[in-house]
Length: 129
Image 1 (cartoon, one colour):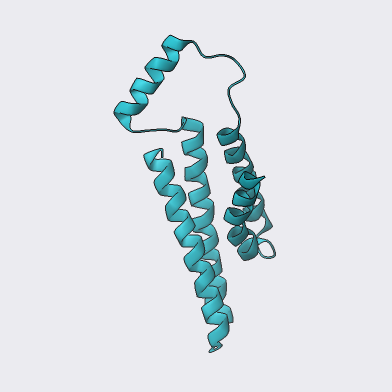
Image 2 (image 1 turned 30 degrees about the horizontal axis):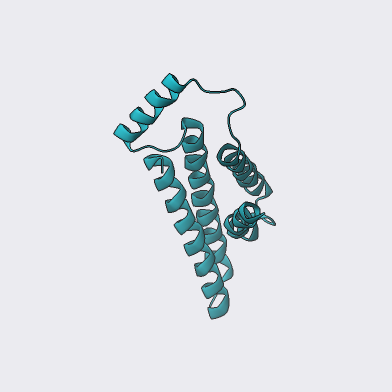
């Protein structure tokens, strides 16, 4: 259950920023979160031979990469979704603000949160951490 609450906390900024204006982006982000949740919580169904596992661990240690290629691609895609959501929210916020300080602050906070999450997803996908 703790893992699900963590996922809910990570997806909340995306859903709040894009659900009403860009449902396709919201759907893509939620689908990618589902894929990432599956990849990080599911053990392989077939047993891995010890020699293959040993070789994979040695390679991972040399490269300092701890995640699978599918996990890394999913993280990079999540970074793209969050970057697109941040740009979309910034564009909408620039049109809606018109001197309203509270709207500007709320829009800026949303853009900052989405941009920060994009950086996290891009860096963890690139580094494989």
